[in-house]
Length: 263
Image (cartoon, rainbow, N blue to C red):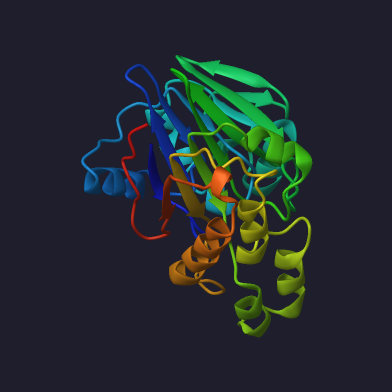
């Protein structure tokens, strides 16, 4: 697994098995994706499929440019497809698009993808878990809170990529207009460090199983890697000894790829 970028300016995560290459979101141009892959010793090559979680440009800006590298479909919800067509027209989509729905399971080569709804201010947003050879990865960003359904899907993960978007105090005094601040803090906005900390500290909600816990989609204006990490570390330290987290805590970056991580 390689997180090519994670943040408000672009998101893309590559997950590979010996047989299959799957990209979750395409918020980088083809040229930038190739550059970041080369930085970690990989090449763009072909992609078996693309999962588009929602229509916001930091997840879709590279869709058209990746069409020639995509030998399978781009999976997205009908709401996301309509929003993209309304914004950029059908030419902004890859040639092969397959509409899916929350709750659906997809088989892409030897990878099983499960899609589930998340509360975010997009047309029909989803997050996903990805399973192959007994390993489970969850990619969960762009959500205002963690409902029970989301917590259910996060159980039993070997690698959890979870949004820790903003520090509430930084957001309140930061440069955004108040209407944007309200949106970010709302139940259809983004997860704060505090909200993530509450989840991580609760042994009944978070099982502590992941070998890797990756804090993702950090705001460059309203958070810092140090604050996000400290908040998560304090929450994990508060867990009961019998439910201690023994994995590795990482922080994904907007500017520098993270990985490859072997699972």
